[in-house]
Amino acid sequence: MKAQDLRLKTGDELDQMLVDLKKEQFNLRFQKASGQLENTARVRQVRRDIARIRTLKAEAQGAEKKDEG
Image 1: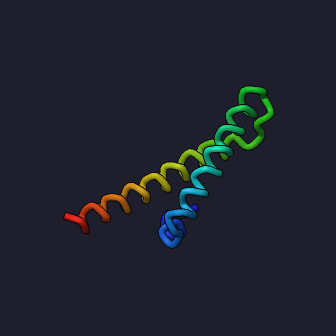
Image 2: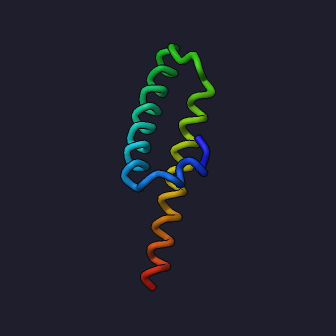
């Protein structure tokens, strides 16, 4: 997932994507613990996608505060 694609999404869409990724991350942790995880690279992808979304949300909040003051 690219940051450019995420910038086109609304805040609600980003929130929903974040929830979905957190659920996936939880499931991947369980798969790893039980030895069933096949695609180990997916753990890294999910973690970075979560960070991208959080960064974009923080940027948006910063822009809102800047507009207010």
